[in-house]
Length: 157
Image (tube, rainbow, N blue to C red; front, side, top):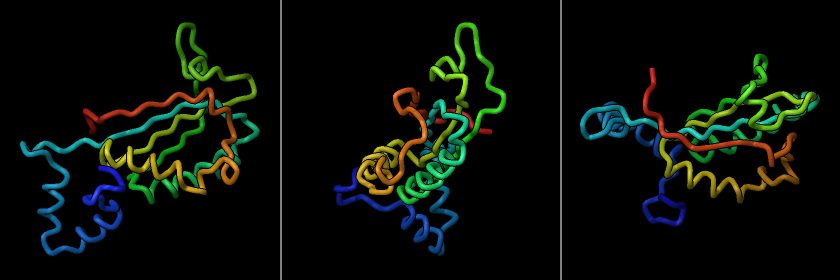
């Protein structure tokens, strides 16, 4: 699904419309379950980065602005975590993965999307949003050392 498709629907508008429909419960069962009755799993984009410890408040503000944009673009949940117990490994570790320096803290973040298609559309629109322009919302960390990926949920408890 892409923004230029005639079938494109803003997820927030759709949720509002569906929730007000008299058969909302039945519609949600159809929307959130696969044909065989199994619950549909959402799409998660995850990130790990090293943030200068002195930039914690700048990081939180960057997250606040970014989360607002992501939610407007269809994200269901945005979670940003500041590392408090992230040990250095001998072979692999979060600090090693992002080449964290002594004066940096590892952050772990994820965004839950209804689907990979909504994530793709959201990311395209995010790149065009002036609130995400580095001149308006500078990243308070080295973006070259961020690791990220997209994941399909296969289990949730």
